[in-house]
Image (cartoon, rainbow, N blue to C red):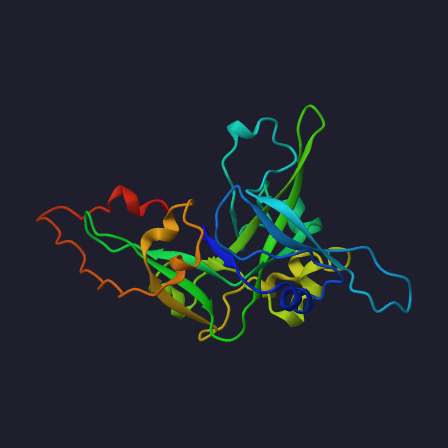
Length: 258
């Protein structure tokens, strides 16, 4: 799962990395949370023959995917992530997988390791590339229209099984699209979902490094660079002893991200 991420890259670096013709000012965002606007990249209109201008454009969408067929958003769950293994066939994401694949620029993401045992405190990690200041997650976009005609652009980040580096922290991680695969991922005209399934796999071991940080990131109000300050990693606690004749059960806080 990916429930928090950051985007700290300077505008020029992000524009060049994403191959964008234009990009507005890019403020540093240390703690991007669900329902907030996120920067995404979509395939743009094709330029005139012979033009060297990029075909991609950047826009803002609400982080929380809303299928077009939803009548009342209050009756629909907040979809911040989509499982790569099932997105092609799932009703909520099927159309977006075919027609509206996007890139979500990031500098890294946050995840929590939740130890076994009642009352054990979760350890937060800032997970970033070992090389480079920016990467792009695979995402999906949908424009939701209300009964009064107003429209909201919404998006979700695709996740996959964690690689060996991240598995000790969490069993899921965002799908990372490599720069050389940007065009293929965004091309929804000639590349059907089945043609890009090879891109929705865990990134190679060694790509990320995980830095233990404080639990400040769990609070949306904390938006400063101090949330990235390293802390001493909490020791992994041994699972709680099973009572004779009964199995140890996970505490309720292990069932959700926050």
